[in-house]
Length: 174
Ligand SMILES: [Fe+2]
Ligand SMILES: [Fe+2]
Image 1 (tube, rainbow, N blue to C red):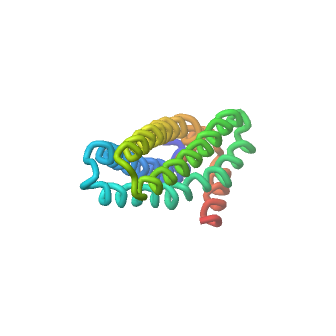
Image 2 (cartoon, rainbow, N blue to C red):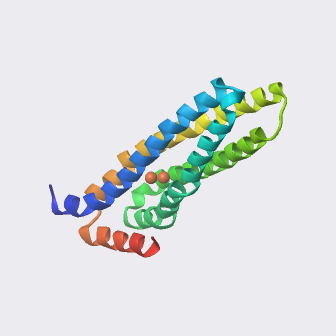
Image 3 (tube, protein in one colour):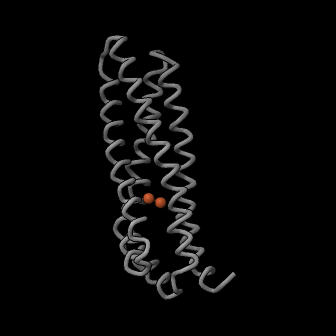
């Protein structure tokens, strides 16, 4: 292992761990989507509570991860590795897309919690399934793309001093 890779691996490891955590929540999210669709009214309350837990994670830990990337990691990389500019444009657009879908999902869940006719409930559940599935696909492809692009570049192209500076900025923010 090169010196640069040794220094950067702690930082990249932390970011990858965060992606792993998101992946676990995403799998749980998928299960909840299935239950919401197929378990019907008797389990609706419990499934809505579970959906609320996943939303808490997306609004909390996952949102902090995205902010750290948007405010610190992405701008830093654009300065130090300018060829990443277009990649980072795509990654930022993914974040915006995810935040919009998260808001839509939250609104749909609130709608579902209100008293509805069976056919209204079925229509909302269908929209929830569509938006939720989109969010899952987006998160998975986004995280894979980050691993293969920016995480790899951090390990191979940043100078040890640059890695230390980036870590310092992340610690300061966190
Ligand atoms: Fe990201
Ligand atoms: Fe990320």
